[in-house]
Length: 487
Image (tube, rainbow, N blue to C red):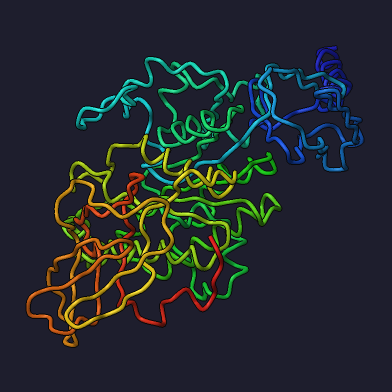
């Protein structure tokens, strides 16, 4: 008789277990208040009991499917126009899930290391010169735009099911305080200019190298990586990127590199970025997804204590060059320059995160959304021509004109003759060109610009964007592997 209660309990568990397992479960990224990508097919997916019928309803659409043998199910909603009015998305199986206040607009994924993770709380406490109104430092106090929605990835929880579906928030109050400042200001600029809802996902880890953000599969599939790759490949990709796919996105923003620059990487980093971009696009099965990223800001890497690799004042410029090389190797990419966004050269986390976000948005507006009136980048080197003692620098077609930001003589230029010794140079703007010369250099052979880790030059476009660092003496073997794409 003493065993009877136990037997009854085990029988009860056996009878109720199938019912408990038959519930429809959604990934965390699908939740109340989310933004669905407009004008693209929208996957909705999850798990259920094998063979369980699942129905998804939204905006008058209805899609049905049956869970596979492993419990996975997925439907795809046809593309929709933007909608700023919250609607209910219903997923029905044995149970019914009703996701409230769902919008349709633009969705972007922002990732990287600490400078992308840099929170709005930190942003409100930085010390910078007085800012024009509305002051971005006080954005937390007034942020209340229901058309901007944010989703902060938690490394330990993203892959786990969530019965509350509360991962998305309006960009305000405590949710915004803990959210990425660059990602928020990127979303704010897009929402202001496009006039549609914007959802932005932040998935970043301070101090992370690029390798953990790339799947192990991607590394194994590329013969370039003949030796095992350090840096824990896939460590962050698996819990923080893969579970987000196939949530429909417009594109990616990336702010990372400091940890790899400390290792004095150059062309290896270029290839790793290429691997990352291609693997992420592969995860979303969309090779056209744009990828915009941040060129690192000036910082005294050469003065770091106990470096793992020898570092010099040229370590950072060489890394800038490696970042820039991605533009020629991978289509639909874009880079922003940040040489002017520094207050202290010993601070690896420079302020002005609102400018970072806005400049990334300028790239998206110009290249992705076709807003030709938006200036996406500052002066970019095109060619060198010498005339006697003067080197003449031409730039790629530029929106606006060349200017000295502070009205002072141009800074950051050095020039070398046949001996290869670079010396400080005088430079002046002449129309669409910059003329460079130096006493003692009778016949210039090469010019470098901002080729120092501490360089904060004043050559800008009159649209407020800084010139990209360059050197004209770059070895031919390092020129983008012979592959060229338009940005």
